[in-house]
Image 1 (spheres, rainbow, N blue to C red):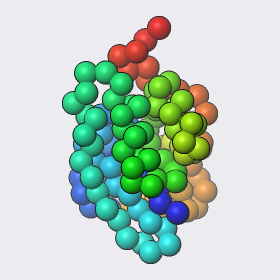
Image 2: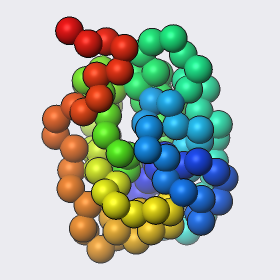
Image 3: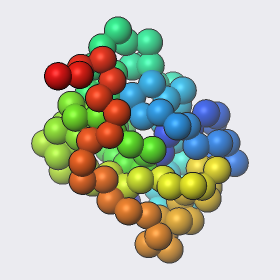
Image 4: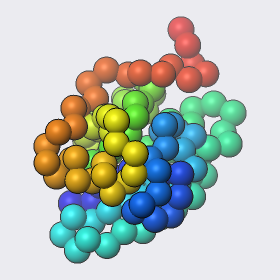
Length: 121
């Protein structure tokens, strides 16, 4: 399974980013091979809709699950459309800790959107 995580850096020891759509990097971790790849988030500078643009990057990189601080309404809708479940990263500090927390089944799923970003009703 390929996990997508929000990261401030390019290493497993990097801090988790407290943003989804505007995270600095996405780290994709393959649970079968323990390999990871990192991409710079091209949506982080978007004027609006960064969450939905970020979801497209997850799809393009074959993510099967997202671990994030929260997701906005458009991003959650897009995640649901592509059947990518999202889990709240909680109080962990590093990407590696977030992966371990997911493996230990201690993360809560994200069922409701959090930050509404620039698209407040």
